[in-house]
Image (cartoon, rainbow, N blue to C red):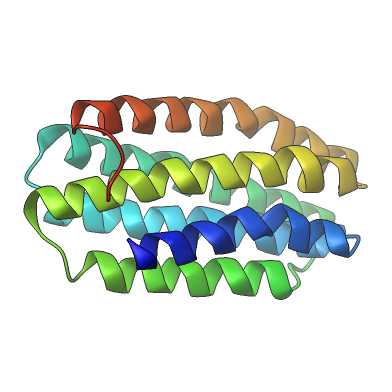
Length: 174
C-alpha cells in the first residue's frame, strides 16, 4: 500500500512538476517517450507474469499500443530534427516506473494482478492529466500537438479498460 501510494503521488505530481516550468517541445518529446516506455515495461512484465488471461491480454495491449505511440513520436521528432531533452518530469517518470517494476517483481498471483491493474489506473489517470494540462497546452509545434491530441483517446480507452479489469478483480489494490 505504501509503495503504491508513493508511485501514485509521484505520478499525480507530474502535471504540477511539468507545469511549474514551461516545458519545451524537446522536453515534451522526452516525457512522451519515457511515459510510454514505462507502460511498455510494465505491460511486458504483466504479459509474462500474470496467470490471469485478461491481464496478460491487457499487458500485451499496453506493449503494442505504447510501442506504436513511441514509434510515431520518434518518427515525428526525427522529421522535425528535435532531440528529446531529459528533464525533471521525464526523470521522475523513469524513476517511478523503475520502482513500480521492482515492486511488481516481488508479487505473484492475485497480489501481482491487483497491484499491476491499480498502477495502470493511477498511471493512465496521471498521464491524461499531464497531457491535458501540460503537454498539449505547452506544445508549440503543431505536429507535436496534433500527435498528442491524436493519441489521447487511446489513453482514455486504456484507463477505462484498466478500471473494468480492476472492478472484476474486486476493486482497488490495498
